[in-house]
Image (tube, rainbow, N blue to C red; front, side, top):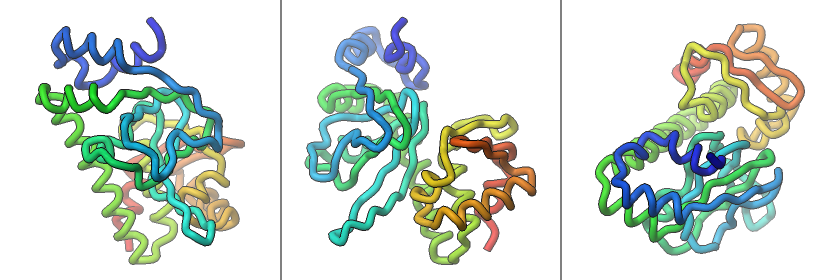
Length: 225
């Protein structure tokens, strides 16, 4: 079994697809390998593909006219991104950039829309994903307005591990420099926060990776003002 078929078969909606729908998806989907720092897609391009992260992880970002980049979401392996844009059609309003070498599943828009229009379980899956991401965006706005920077770091790490079992350690292939970019904070500040959270037993860190040890504890930081 190839890596794309294995990835798709692990999706919660797959078992609910009809044989014809499953065949259409497996026949039409394809993969891309994207090197760290390269674009999966760019702002202004056609929103004609739904992306799943098979391995690695990516970020959503925009760049101001002055050239300053702002990252506002990260997507880890196993998750999907871009369903809202694909539903609406038109152009992308953000860049998707690989933060590590990543293998990406690509579902063409006609296939995506066919499943959306015909399969209720697939629709429920999309609603769950978008609702979950909306909750993180609201949490991000809440934290930004409270200027609780440690909670902002915790929120990004929670977002990267949102589908993992809360009582199991989960390692993210993420350097502190990359975490700083996702949080919009300095590398020096991130280093201090990581050390503090490590002392609290919430995570551990090594070169190029961070392991979340206590997801519930990190989520608790998001509730603090």
